[in-house]
Image (tube, rainbow, N blue to C red; front, side, top):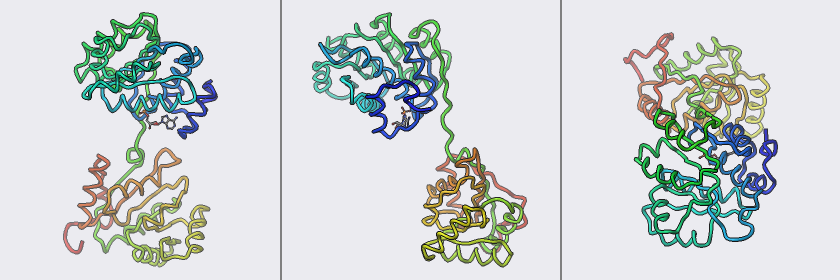
Length: 385
Ligand code: AMP
């Protein structure tokens, strides 16, 4: 599915291309056709799903097709109400980017700053107004804004709006809107009072679109940790590789020297493995990588830097022979699996010294990684780390 398939007009397509959007996100795919038909929409979606473009694109398209902004004095035809200054600015930037090849102009207004530059922008005339509720009402009372000509109304982040105590402001704003309009209502959650508010804003039978937030890599990948003494790590690795003989496995080592040592240990156990790291020649690295990609080499040992160029689909298993001391590195490593496939497996070896790293990683990914106790080399807390 492309934006062109959704019937998006050329000036917007060009702008989206410049933004680097090659494909609509799920909420865009579902919402754009509904909105282009002029229907009301109740969207259950969070920031990060592409929801801004899902409403901005069809509104720009409809305004453009109606010749908006091309002649005569500009009037506020579309109003977006959003709870925070940051969101307002972000939405304003999106409208600006997507409408840059049209005559449509937008302005952003929010509280907490002097109103001068905002009222100046309004005097010049705008077609799309993005606003936080308090400042909007304030400037309406002062006569800088009228909602008489609004044809499109978008209430964004409704649940946050209610949490922030904006319900009365919103009711006042709704009361000033023309009854004939297209309305869009977005909220990440749909508690009873949100649905009630939606009922006051939307027409009797709005279309509903629900988008689950995208899972992060850390949620998609099946992870586990083995507590093991440093000296036992090679034996544990052999044990796991022998139990998974057909998986292409990427093993991470913190050091180049460590990577070479792992290769030697595996070769002695008759497991075909090779290492890639900065001390290997370009040819050696390329050969190891090609063999790994072609399935001729089952196990590849890599340092973090060398692993950057590895793009292997259907990598079933990642093993962290050493835990990285930078927690973000862990996320990069495990992102090597579960890329093309729906899920992958990432196993980590953790010795006594590395427990602090494990703690940092769990904090970053906001998950507790399950521990596998049942293995032949458990670290009983005695002996070497
Ligand atoms: P939003 O959920 O509207 O805050 O959007 C989240 C991010 O996704 C923003 O940085 C957008 O620029 C970006 N985005 C929106 N739609 C697309 C798309 N179709 N392709 C790529 N990026 C997109």
